[in-house]
Image 1 (tube, rainbow, N blue to C red):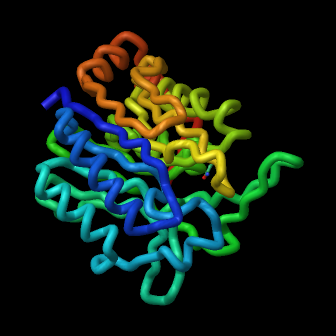
Image 2 (tube, helix red, strand yellow; image 1 turned 120 degrees about the vertical axis):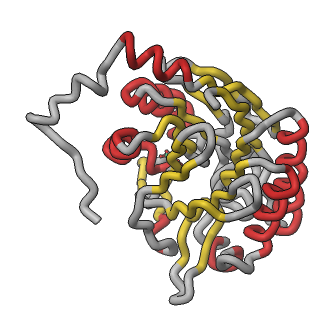
Length: 277
Ligand SMILES: NC(=O)CC(=O)C(=O)O
């Protein structure tokens, strides 16, 4: 199958975990009603994006209430579901920023733990140090679907082009990046990063982000986005809650790679990137 419908759910995240889960379920249902075959949620969609909340909202696989809802609804609606991300606790008490991925039967087919933690300090604008509370993941996440191989990364991961090139060299055609940029880095870098990663790898890129809440301690930029292998924006939301549905045409990847064969022109005799673990 060379075409499928992708749905991004940009939802408002509150301090009420149960309400966040209910809202996510409602929006997934709406996206499925609108024809989406692959649905994506935002980074930290069940928990405010703030270190002080992560331990309290964290849950473990497979019994966490959010994880159970994601599995149930992907089965009920017969959709692939990239469950944004949530704080995940392992059996040693480490907490990760994790995206759980489900197939159309509700089976888990992938689990991406954010590899690059968001530790930044932009003077007078924004400081955040995920590593104060979170542990980092150590593996690439690629899932097989009947459409194509799909890669998953989370937010700050997008700033590391080697990760994306590695996934593409392993055959990935679509990369989903649940994210929550902010009002400093969003306007400056959001579109640029999604267009660049799509263009330099000739793949589709997409992200769902939380809707903007001006009263939150961390204000999400919103602007959930899909970019294509030509580097153009296929669709984008504004800052409010909403759903974006677009067709992903995998034929475009083949056409563009034929006309502009940059992946064939890689000088692997001169330089290479490789996975170390
Ligand atoms: N929140 C993030 O992980 C990343 C981000 O906001 C940025 O890179 O900017």
